[in-house]
Length: 116
Length: 111
Image 1 (cartoon, chains in turn blue, purple):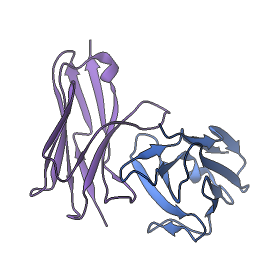
Image 2: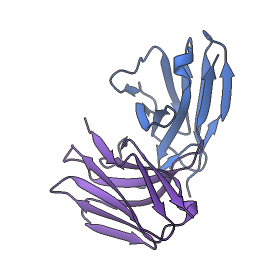
Image 3: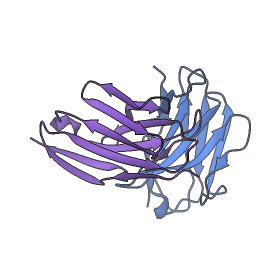
């Protein structure tokens, strides 16, 4: 089946620094990827939709200047958390849809971000 | 936008009993309803899904029902086992688009 690789799995960074998270589709081309955030014991909240070759679409309340998304190729989308603060500590998960399947979504393994 | 509500937030059952989790959605355009199981610190795993043209789907001990008129769908797990313990999320989506997740149900199966 489709595989989505996400790196890093865990990252600890100092407050004020930036962190980049990568999401790769390994065996298919993903024109669209989705980024979710999950706080402890809470649900997955959609942050943004990443479209290859165009600007990402952000959900209401998500700061586009803080969470930079780049989808420069059909197999890679990146999320950069800029000027991270402790309240940004969360579990970030990407997902991608196989273009040949209407419902074939695959999730990455997630990234646990801790800002100290 | 879509709003998905999920109940209950926690559920404890004895091993062998059934568990039922219910979700409602608001957007009548939603046509795909997956259920995910998530273990602590891991990615959500799809366990079953249903499309709007079907009222019920079953896969061994897991079944999902959909009532489009009432905009609700339910997950049914029969003969529960300790390894079924996890957090379960429902979601709603329109074809090819993003998911909107429910708030999750923490299921505990007591041996």
